[in-house]
Length: 76
Ligand SMILES: [Zn+2]
Image 1 (cartoon, rainbow, N blue to C red):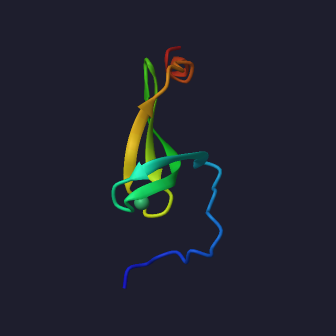
Image 2: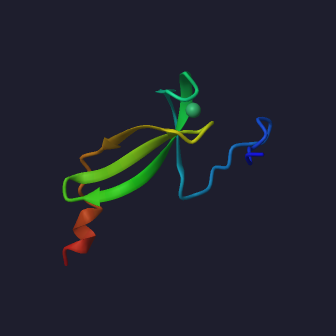
Image 3: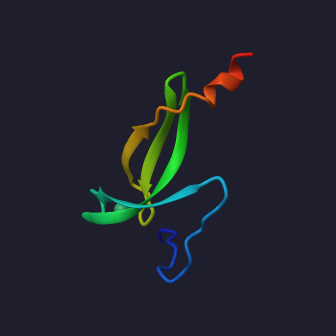
């Protein structure tokens, strides 16, 4: 038995997990799914995010934004 959340349960939108309304195609579900955005890395050039399917948890892509402001806090 694999632990699986019932489909009727409300999504767990914890404060550290930024929820994005956009959908991406999930290979595992074989259809577009709402995705969750996880902060992966903070780079000098911006923050790298990983997108995972909110239904099955499969990684569906990643993105790096151009916001370098978060990195500057490490450069005293
Ligand atoms: Zn999926």
